[in-house]
Length: 134
Image 1 (cartoon, helix red, strand yellow):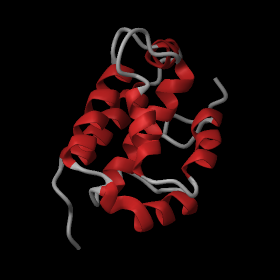
Image 2: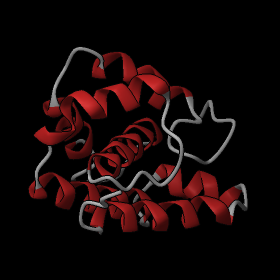
Image 3: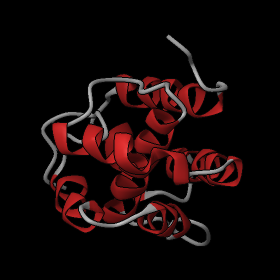
């Protein structure tokens, strides 16, 4: 795992996936979230699903943290494409990545980084909250 931090965009897999995001719509988010839908979740798919869930939370007006500039631009341009069903898919994906059948969870637990799990809790809350108005 090429990671330098526990946040959604602090790993090589998520940053590499952002190339797919550029010039695309909500289907790329849905696809990334759906890849962790069944069976054992490998670390690359888990990292990408967490990034997609972070984008979903941002589309709800609740980004848990700072977004890379290109992601913020995507949210502005395409955020309205994501629906309540996408939010549910994001919540399920975060739960799967945090669960017992997840390589990413094993790696972060072995690294003794409780902040990773806390960041996933914040992410789930960000996805679940209704759109935050300013």
